[in-house]
Image 1: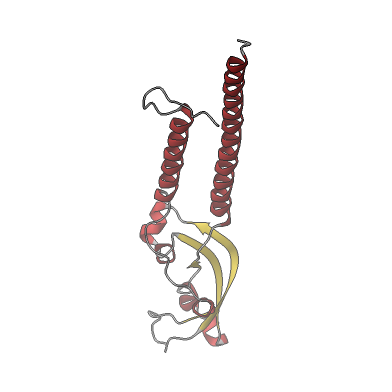
Image 2: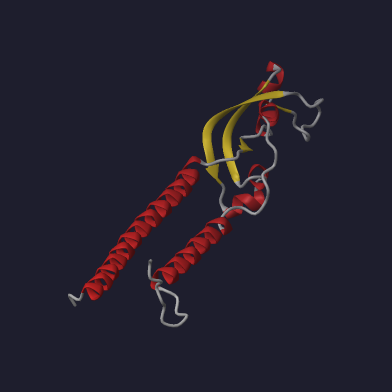
Amino acid sequence: MRPSIQRNGARPSLSVLILALLCGLSLATTVLSLSSTPTTPYAPLSVNNLTKRYPQDVPNTANPPYTCITIGECQACSALQVKTEESCKDTHNRQRIECKYDDPKNDEDEELKIRLPTYHSCLRVKAVEARRFAHFLSSNVFLALFSGILMMWRKRKLAAAQYRRMARRIGIA
């Protein structure tokens, strides 16, 4: 028959307190990392919208079509760019593009060339995603190490208590 373990009072053990503290810290870091992301929802972007565009405010033309290709990586916009530039308002990120008119006659007109877009909105910045992944990975490694150390400490503590109980029964101590 196995003897039951009696606790002195209703005092929570150290491991329960540490686990609660760890859960609280994990929740706090998650909330802080989420608060640093943009609050505006991502606008739907499609490849078709990025390759063919039609300028709305080109004077004396019937909205000549142009084709754009991406030439740079997605970059995060600064706070000023988010407020002022149209390409940064949707996702807070932008990507450099190079646009040319489909009609060669329109490509020669300097006023029309100035009105071509140079950036478009994009969804993910590689550096930001890599930093978030590294933060997530390091948090998990820390949690795994801490849990392993806590488990080993608790196992040794229980083994020592069991040894003392056994020694008391036998009459060694």
